[in-house]
Image 1 (cartoon, chains in turn blue, green):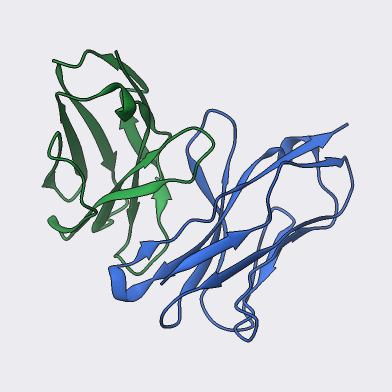
Image 2: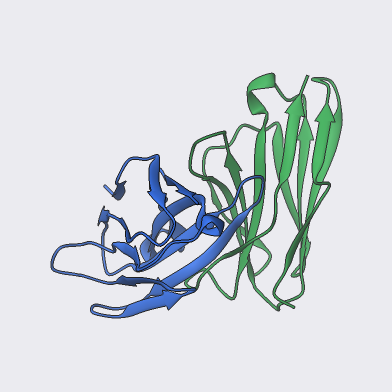
Amino acid sequence: GNSVTQMEGPVTLSEEAFLTINCTYTATGYPSLFWYVQYPGEGLQLLLKATKADDKGSNKGFEATYRKETTSFHLEKGSVQVSDSAVYFCAPMIYNQGGKLIFGQGTELSVKP
Amino acid sequence: DTEVTQTPKHLVMGMTNKKSLKCEQHMGHRAMYWYKQKAKKPPELMFVYSYEKLSINESVPSRFSPECPNSSLLNLHLHALQPEDSALYLCASSHNPSTEAFFGQGTRLTVV
């Protein structure tokens, strides 16, 4: 079946620290891959995407590379800020299921000043 | 305009009430979605409309009834809900079912 495994949170970092949130997936076909972010009390925002192998998605200093051989899409940021505190969801899109997003469990990030 | 607008933002309803959640987008997207999100959990897909036709129903109980009156609007009609249906209900849209989805801010529903 289709599934996503994200590293468990909460992750607590100091400002300007390096961030990695691991994501691996099992999916039929050749999914597009997304990271969404959810700030407290809000809906989800698309953070970045990659649609084919070796693509690198990037936005707001965050990056993730589509690794087909390891079925991974790890999220990284070189220097986190307090304003990055949120829950991050990894989500492959399964085309043969009508474009269904398969969400990981979410990783809560807390950045301290 | 890259927004998906959901109303109301908060809703409290009794178990015998009938209410509706509304979602609107003006991006020309032809796929629209309802998700349910419980606290500390990921969103769960409920329904997908593609070109105004219901294409996916994830075995949602009939007390939830979706409606897509036109390509810009999506409603979720609620009737005889249970307290365990209390959650954040998220609407999303995408250009088509194969492209990235954009989410609204959600309606926080409390069933009493």
